[in-house]
Amino acid sequence: MSMNQETPGVKREVSGEGGVAEVSEIYPGASSVSPVQRRGRTRPRSAQAGMATAEYAIATLAAVGFAGVLVFIMRSDEVRGFLLNLIRTALALP
View (cartoon, rainbow, N blue to C red):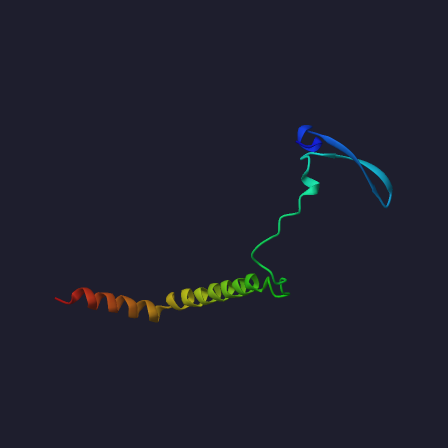
């Protein structure tokens, strides 16, 4: 076994732009392993990635407006009388 795998908290010195720093590895040996490559989406996200949310919001507002118009029409006396007459006729059939 190597030194990194035997000791749980390995301290090592890393030199960088600002000088030398002491780094404690939580997972010893992790810095020597190549990073995991992401799979799946390979092309960059386009600028229109969030457009579906806006389209759903507009469709929802249109549906609410249409429902409001239907409620207004259904509350009128002409439509109410027509629907009641239709139901009475349907129930009166033998």
